[in-house]
Length: 297
Image 1 (cartoon, rainbow, N blue to C red):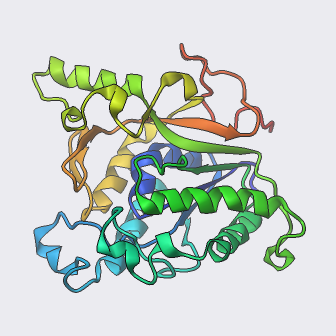
Image 2 (cartoon, rainbow, N blue to C red):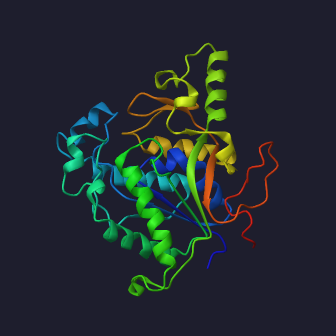
């Protein structure tokens, strides 16, 4: 088997590129096996391309199928060849934002039978045998139901996959050595806002209030790893452009469907929540510079 194996569990197509695109491309280039497990097709997403507006959930409801093609193009840009959907494409539907009618749809991921969903994830963990798994924190980063559910499924699957008594028909038990949650340090957002101000531009974070209150930002002291993927920035940009219905790319910045702009970072940050922390990298914070740090050859 390939010496280094990374599994990422995400909620919708495009989440992987925004959070981990540079990391994925870096590890693929270094010869690691990178597997992406996406939980829904993103059917409830807004459509940023006017000519494709009819694909939306409240019209033809064909956005999910279209986003499979976008994800395929994004993975090609990052060099990732192993990407799948939890339980197969279309098994679980995008739940939409909390409090919307989409939450109640029968196939909404938010309403999924957790044991069933965990079983699907365990099968992937036992097949691919990753040393490292990446997903969201327990709030899903910013509270989206599908992100929270992806967190629950991923964390439960890590435990279940290691248990010899759990559904042996799904494969030999496997223990994931390290689990990371995606994160953004508050200092990074603050520096981004200051850089914009120095250019005479409004901060892309103003509508969310003070940096200390932005829900997906975390204190620097809980960050444990910073993966430098700046050499793969071009691949990340290309992957973002592939998600055209969801992301508008404009130079080093991009706007999501809520018109929130965020700097495209070649350095992506993580919080270790399972496993032993590896040696610190060369940076000033004492963070790991490799998700496989401490795991040996």
